[in-house]
Length: 150
Image (cartoon, helix red, strand yellow):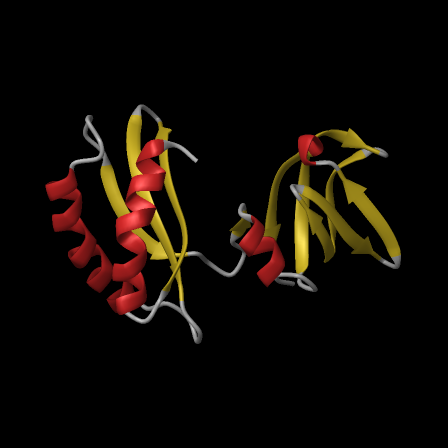
């Protein structure tokens, strides 16, 4: 995790939790020459626009005060979404037994995309059940994993 993400996660988590939500992820990325700081939140029953607005208004002054980012950026708070990306060990453990889509860097057995039930996670290695067949992927093979709603 980079320093900006670490710092923002540290001070944003309590604010998010005080507002009845869970901090799902923080990302600091460059897209089209513009930097974005995004906080993704989750809540039982779903996240509303009001939740995002409250958390944005609470975190924004702390961002100004702590000033963890040197260059200009766009700040966003949003729901993690139904088809959220799984990145951290806690995400995988929480979503065990759920339907996921695994995207690989290179084709394996003729495909780069596998859909199945998440059945195992060990230090980045992933096992999914695809129609009764266990598929195991090493961490180095996996580009990303996300929940999949059918």
